[in-house]
Every structure is written in structure tokens, then in C-alpha cells.
Amino acid sequence: IIDEVHMLSTGAFNALLKTLEEPPSHVIFILATTEPHKLPATILSRCQRFDFRQISMTGIIQRLQKVVQSKQMNISNDALQIIAKKADGALRDALSLLDQCMSSGLQTMTADDVIEMLGTVNDADMIQLCRHIIQYEIGPLFELIDKITSGGKKVNVLLEELILFFRNILVVMTVDQPESALELTKETASQLKQLSKVITPERVIFIISELSKLENQIKWVSLPKVMFEAGLTGICLGQSVTWTDEGLETRLNNLETKVDHLGVLSNVQENVPLRQAPPVVDKAEKGVGGETAPVVDKDSTTAPMVHEDLPFDDDGQKTENFKDSKGLAVWK
Image (cartoon, rainbow, N blue to C red):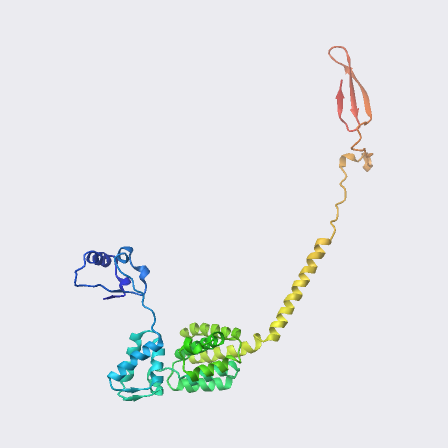
């Protein structure tokens, strides 16, 4: 078994390729990776591909029950469900978490014991935390955060659980049978249904988006709890001020008024007549002393001709010059 095979160098792949081309009959190579696109085509062409998917929570719980029975221990189903939920579809992680709980030496474990060992937050506190955010109860929200963090819970874990719970609320609002989709207990699913009746999907999406932004920002601060409290306060205040129906209606009315006003201005500009420039008088048309020369019709073809006597030409014949009123000369 070669785990994370995509991390091999080019030289290692070339050496492995020779072995894969002529493998021994008693050897089977298993190349495990989460990024198969990074493997060379020469390697992929000589392998069979099997995609591993997440295991359902029910399947993980059944496997954990067999392990617990073989160890002759008593662990409640709620505790096993918490372990399976924490594993997020990975059976190997679930077995590791179960081994961590069994190392405590307790022969009987409840859900509270597992929560204490794994550092997670119980569903009751998470439901109450979501309720305070939905109902804009900032004071009780701070008290509950102090209670949870004083018990040793990390802020990043609390924030991650909060995002998942609001996601579950959104699923409850949109799915007909959320119990099977979320694999929650009946009590938790019933409480989520109650919360979904007092909040809109738009606000749930807004809260999830803001919590995701807060999750990225909280990694770089020295006081994550203060940042967490400030972020939740901003979500409550911003939601109550910005996302009310009255505020949206007022903003839409203002935008419509501005658009209508812009339309009136554009119509006025289109209807304004163009002003013609005054006619330009040629300086050549003005006479001596500033007097204006007589205006001659441009369309006239019978302009008066002026006759002038000119000297005789070389042949001894008299040449006549005719000038029109525009100063053009015609020679005959």
C-alpha cells in the first residue's frame, strides 16, 4: 500500500512504472491518494480505479457497536452517534475517536462523557445558541458563550458547530424528511423544526455567510473569543437594522425615485432645440470704409458683365476682356 502516492517524485514514478509493467504474481499494489489527477498518465493507465466515498452515520454506528461488544464495554447509542458525527463519514477516524474514549478506563460511558473527552458541544447548548441569535438576544448569548468556553471548549470548534447547525436549520426548511437527510436524533430534529418556523431562509443564508467570514478572520486574531462575540453581535444588530422589510422597502422606493428622475432629465435634454449659429459675413463682401457690398444671389446665372478695352495682341486684333461681378475674367 503506497499512501499519498501523488507525492512521489518523477524518478520514483519511473522506477515504480517498471515494476507495474511486470508485477510479480503474488503482489498487488494499492496506490492511495486524494488527488489522482496528479498521477502520471503512464501510471493511471496500468491501474484499476476505485473511488472511496463517505460511510453513512448508520454504518459507522453499527461498526462501532461491534467493536464495543467485542471489548465488553457499555457505551450508549447517543455517545456512539456523537463519535460517528465527529468522524464525518470516515470509519478510520471513528475508530480512532472510539479508542480515545476507551482509553479513559470507564466501562460505561454516556453522551456527556464523550462530549467532555472529545471537546465538542452538546446539542442542547447549540440549539439554545441558535435561538439567541435568531431572537436577537445579545445578553443571554454572551452568558451562554461564557458558559461553553469556560468548560474548555475552543472558539473555533464552537463556530464550526454553529455553522453546521444553521445549515441543518436550512435543510429542515427545505427537505420533507430531514431526519434521514441529517441523521439527527428525533429530539434535535424537533427543536430545529421549531426554530425554522421563526426565521426566513434569506436570514439563515445571511447568518451562514457571516459566520463563514468570521471563521476566516478569527484565525489571525490574538483574542478569538472577543472576535467571536463581536461577530455575533454584529450579526444580530445588522440583521435587525438592515434586513427588515421596512428598510428594504424604503431603499427600493428611493432607488425608483432616482431612476424616474433620471428619465425626466434625459427626456428634457432630448427635446431641447438646437440653436443655429449666426451667419458669417465674408470680409471680402465689405466695401471700403466698412460698407457692406451688395449681396448677389448665388443661384443667378445672368450676372452682369463688365466690358474693358485691352491693348492689341500680337496679331493686331483687339482682345476683349469680360469681367463678371464676382471678379472672374473671360478672354476672347
